[in-house]
Amino acid sequence: MPLPRTRGTALRQRLAELRGPEVPAKALDARALAALAANPGCKRRAILDGAGVNKTALASALGAPSAFGQSQFALTRGNAFEAKVKADGGAELLRLVHERLDRGAEPPAEAEVPDLTAIGPEGRTARTALALREATAGAWTLLDHPMLALDVAGSPAFLEPDAVVVHPDGSWTVVEIKSFPLLDGSADPSKVGAAARQAAVYVLALEEVAARLDPAPKVRHRVLLVCPKDFSNLPAASAVDIRKQRAVTARQLARLTRIEDIADTLPEGTCFAPDLPAAELTAAVESVPATYAPECLSACELAFHCRDRSRAEGAVTSLGRSVRAELGGLTTVEDVLAAARGETGDPDDPAVAALRRAAELRSEALGARPEVLRRRPETPEGPAEALGVSACR
Image (cartoon, rainbow, N blue to C red; front, top):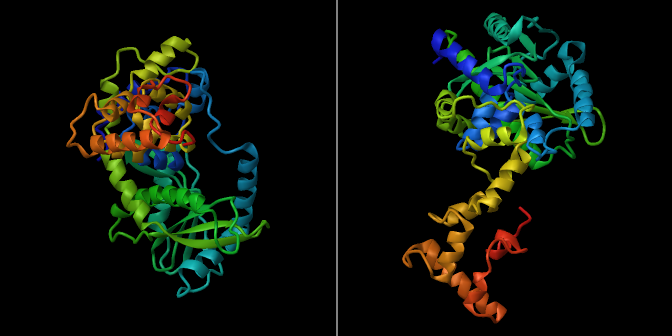
C-alpha cells in the first residue's frame, strides 16, 4: 500500500538528510534489490539503499574500497550487444521470444514499440503502465527499457528491465540481456542464477501492474535470457524458469524491516555523506546494525568494511552462514573456543557436544593436549584457523 502523501513526503525528506542535502540519490536497481532480498536481516544495507546512498563512494571514504561491480569494458560490451539484439525494432529479440517461449503464436512479422519517454521515474512508470494497458490483443508489443515500481520496505523502488514483451494472447514476459556467453547452449550457473534473481524482481513489479488491470494479464514465470552465442556476438537465448527465485525474493522482501522504522532508531543528525570526516562517517555507519556474511563480498560495496568489523568483534558470521547455523547460540569465536575447552556451555547442547568432541579429535590428531585450544583468536592464525575453518571464504 502506498504511503499517505504527508507521511511519504516526511520519509523522503528524512532519507535525503541521511544521504546528505547536496548528494544526489542513487537509484535502487534490480541487481541491488536482489542482493538486499538475499540478506533481509541487514538493516545497514536496507537504510543505505533506501536513502539512495552511493555505497561505492561511501566505502572509499571509509578506507575500505571494494572492487565489486562491472568493469567499464563489460558495460560497453553489454550495451553494444543489447543494441544489436534490439536493432530493427527488436525483430531478432521477438524472434527469440517466439522460438523459445511461444511457438504456438503467429510469428512476429512486425510489432508495436511504444514510446516510453516521460519526465522522471514516476512519469516513466505511469507511461509504462499505460503502454501495457493499451497493448493490442492479437499482436506483439515490445517495451524497450520500461520503468516499473516496486514497494520495498515502505519505500518505492524504480526498476528498469531490459525489455518486456506482450504476447498476442495478452501475457507478459520479462527479457534479460546479458553479455556473458552461452557456450554449447549453457552458461555459467552462478551468472544464470544471478540473472534469474534479478528477473524475479522485475516479475514481482510487473505483477503489481497486472493486479491493477481488469482482467489481470498473466505475467509469465519463464523469462528469456539472451546472451552471445559461444565466442561470437550473435544472440542466442534460453528460457529460464524463475518460479523458485520469485517465491524466495517475495518472501525475503516481506521480511525487510520498514525503512522508516530503521531511520527512527538512528541518532539525530546521522548523515552518510562521503565528504564528512572519516571518524564521523564511521560512527554514522556503525550506528546501523549490519549482518555480514562472506556472500556479501560478491554483492555489496561495503563488504570489506563490514568484514573487518565482523572479524574485529570475533563474530562467527564472518566464517559463513552455514557455520553460524551449526553453532546455535554461540555467536563469537571466543564463545566457541570456550565451549570447546569445556569452560562454558551446556554439555547437552548438540553444538557444544560436537565442539568438545571435535577438540578431542583434534588433540589426538596433533598428539597434543586440549590446552592447544587456549590459543587466542588474535594470534597470527586468526579466528578461522583457530576453529579449524578455512579462511579462504
